[in-house]
Amino acid sequence: MANTFGDQLLKAGLVSKDKLNKTKKSKYKQQKAGNNKGTDEAAASARRLAAEQAARDRELNLQRKQAAEDKAIQAQVRQLIEMNRLGRDGGEVGYNFQDGTVVRKIFVTEEIHDRLGHGHLSIARFDDGYEVIPTVVAEKIKLRDQACIVSKVDSLPASEENDPYADYKVPDDLMW
Image (cartoon, rainbow, N blue to C red):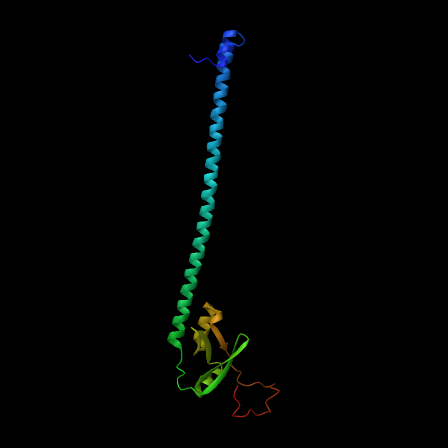
């Protein structure tokens, strides 16, 4: 037999058997509630960690999806430029254009130079250089990625009635 403090009090006649049983049951319930409280805290902590992990996973998936979309757009732009670029071989006429704050120069044929000046052709960034493409294609590329289009001249109006420089002749040998 276990000689506990409650048994000693019962032998001494200080407490009744019913009171001792009630005390034991109450103590047992408190211990059980304390164990459940720890379990509840652990479960809540586990749920919170799972929710945080799910949020991180969603964010990572969004970033991966965005990267895949960007890669697909760049592939489309690259394909459009490769399929529609005009050959500049043998070009002896320099065409100056602005790329950001820097003025660049590419050598093209005279026909391409004229078409660039009239807005029929545009210049696009390609790899480490530049390519001449039709303006229609440049508009399609611009919808996907504006940074690729470097130079696009708006089409010149046919004639303006209020042109203040209409009386001045432009020299034929003027090259910009």
